Structure formats: structure tokens, C-alpha cells
Length: 130
Image (cartoon, rainbow, N blue to C red; front, side, top):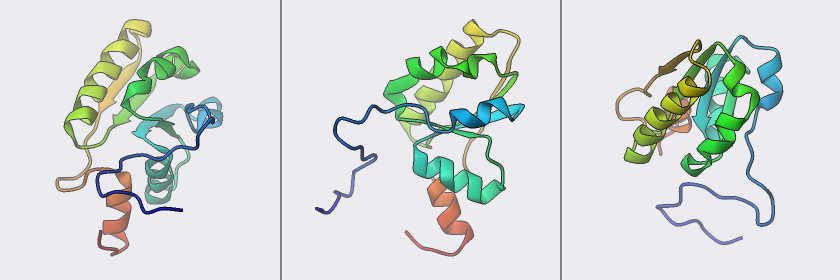
């Protein structure tokens, strides 16, 4: 395999549809946490010890989230990357989910200052530098 460029945000396998990862956990948990990407979802599971994390495959896939069973959840936390696209995605997703499910509690949280995503947070918490 080739090296990934410094600006690479996401890698995907050609021909494999990019769906929501973690949907199986929606049936068993009252609250769900949304993050951008599977690596961030796995990082959050390690950080929190909870499996109620759903990976959204990039900010361009908001429609998949809205059309999923996620809209039936009563409490949703959105933890998008700390960049302009993540900020825009968080607000747009919250608005869209509230229009589909006005009785839900949808909270936008932010990663700690200086950390872009859950993987950065995990690396910092175990002492691995970027």
C-alpha cells in the first residue's frame, strides 16, 4: 500500500458502501453518541467503556443518519470533528434530527481544546504523540 498524504481525512474501500457503523447498539442503549468515522467510534468506546457510539461516514452522509432508526432515539449526543466541516455538520444534523423527532434531546458536545477528534483524545490520554 502507498502512504497517505498529510491532509487525508478518511480512507474507504472501493466498491464498499459507506454506511453507519454501530447500528446494532441502537437497540440496546438509551443514549447514542455520534462521531465522524469508525476510528473515532472505536476510540470513544475505548475512552468511555461504552458501546453506544455510532459512526457517521463523513459529513456528506447526513441523509443516511436522518433516515436511520436513530431518529427514534430520545437522547443523542453529536461529537463531530473540531473543524469547520464538523461544526457545520453538528448544527445541520441537530436541526435535521429535531425536525424528524422534535421530542428528542439532541446535544452538541465538543472535544477538549486542542484535540480535533476522538482518536486525538485517545492518543493524548495514553501518551502517544501525533
